[in-house]
Length: 308
Image (cartoon, rainbow, N blue to C red):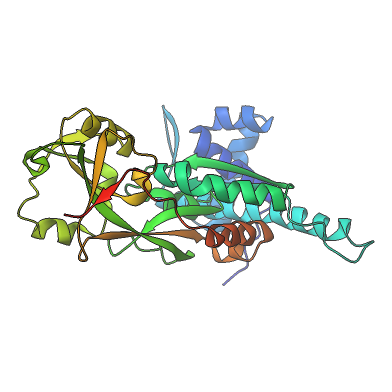
């Protein structure tokens, strides 16, 4: 197979066209002319032997091959950034014989409850130990590709994801479980018969591998109330509009108007972990965040938990 060389600027052009949705907008972003951008894309298509974009009146949209190329392009450009940051960091401490420590951006994708309750203490410790790391968090719905998809597409360095049979780690990524959190029944405090209430649910909850447990519970009715996210579910249940079955992270800091009931020894659980690329797994910033996450235990619901 002939070697194909793509320059970093070609990769930046590729990513810009995909993200901006057209050659004109990509040219503005890159400070180039539209003809130069179009010429660069045609050159990449000749080198690769595939069509990267579907052109039309409404702009340019990546083909299936283009999507893969864009994802790899983002990841290669990110590795070039890491090369510079880690090399400079090692060089900055060369006089004392020690590395100056990891520095530069660290892009994190996380689903809502992990971003609210799992990441903050870890990021606080990370900032104290490694002030040179500039962490940013993007909240991603854990539906479809979810947080792992952000990492695979090169938009995040590490993703905090739910891991299970219905959401396995994509084959091109690596990762591990950080914690296993139990599900509990949540209902208005003091309600005489909470199981008679409608079931409130949200879309992200449906991806859990605990659905087999759900299906076996005759007392659980089909969801009759749908909410946008777990925060909205808590608000609805707190207002007396229904009951819900929710994981521990979603119940962190639950209001006292709610009662959380343990579902017994056979209760369902949800595994939460991290995913990253094999290349970024070896970088100092990703390793540092994983260490801090492993050092912490998840915060459990503050409301009183009672037995079934």
